[in-house]
Length: 239
Image (cartoon, rainbow, N blue to C red; front, top):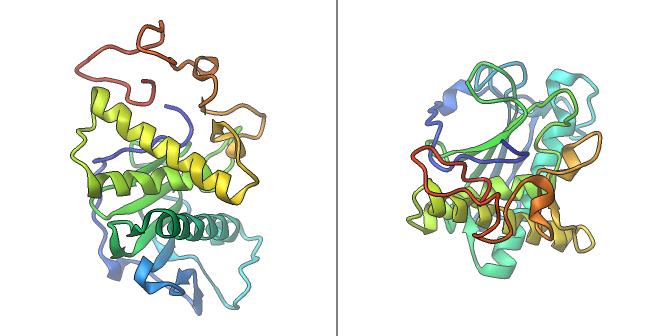
């Protein structure tokens, strides 16, 4: 799978709020409650295990201790704030469900869940966005505006459409996430660019190009050799 791919309806992971620990200061944004509060949760070292709010003993989240996940937490928190503001100001859409529901970001998940830590996904059970800690040639997957918005848009799509997550409807689902990822990046980063996931790659490149899809193995029309026909186990990230 490519950088920033999201799953619309799986995995179905349930976590009780009482299982999430907290500290003196926690990454919780209550600045615009009508648009939904933002909660940023640390999953460092495991897959949805030993969860805690990204927290600190002071109001400045600048710890260099990797397990505190401050750099990732601040990135995810800021990019999610920008996403919510854009969706409201441009489209009148509040929160992840359009009615001001909170947004939860689970950052720096590791191995153990059957999903690569070099990825990101939308957990439909919790209406939560999940970002891998990554490794190798990747930075943590919350370190890019277009990826954060991409995953949030899976929530938007889940709450506003009946798109089945397979074949062409699944491709439309992924395309919606890509498009809004670009829109929000363009809004806050000097017009953005026409690629996705470039900011989390240490050695250049991207997962997809919107101006020239074939350079990353995607079709630019249904007659292109890269176009994927109907299949029982399709790849939604291509078409």
